[in-house]
Amino acid sequence: MVSGVVILCLTLVSFSTANNVEYDGWLNIKLQHSCGLNNQFSDRGNITIQSVRSGGFVLEQNAVTPSELNALKETAKVDGFYKLKSIVQTSDGSISTFLSSMKAETLLSMNFHDVIVVWILHSGAVSAVGISPSIFEPSAQQKLPIEFSSEVYVRHIEQAPVPDTASYIQKVEKEREAREKGEFKDNRSFLAKYWMYIVPVVIFVLLSGAANPEQASAR
Image (tube, rainbow, N blue to C red; front, side, top):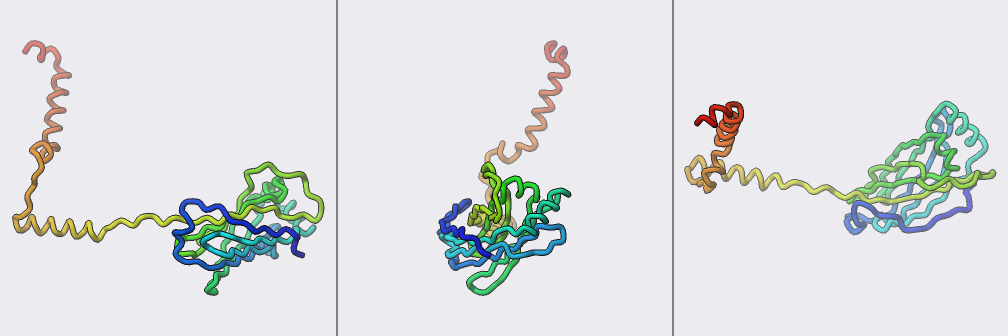
């Protein structure tokens, strides 16, 4: 049974702007969870991201069944984990699965208030889907039927700058060829060329003077 809570909003974008996303399309994320220790998954709900660039989404979640609640309490007694499986289907038909988890006791103490983050690369591909506890204070204890109160964020990962190694290699090769042909001129000053030889000598002289102050004063 799907709960009546349906959320439609624009998500917070961090690390880069949505305009940096090269590809736009929709994503469907089917949520399944395992509340017990047997790793058996059941349907939890669905996230439909209507636009990868804008981050608009619709969230639908099922109510927590009594059996799932009991299984979660038993898992919490042994300090076990609540597990979330996210099955992502893109508009081009590709499917990928991501697993994440949090302590069962934490989920119970937060009264099923959690955070789901969808990480998207600049190409529009999903790199991860994770779950974590909410930073807000838990609400009052829920009565049956218990429902998830989830925050969903779609975050775009900025592509790191790629070093221009080809230009650097070409520069090194040109300098090497110039040296071999005798065309390379070193315009550096005397100190810039031979500082590695001068500095040790200066340090040695200073240390020698500090070690023999009487001889230095006699002179």
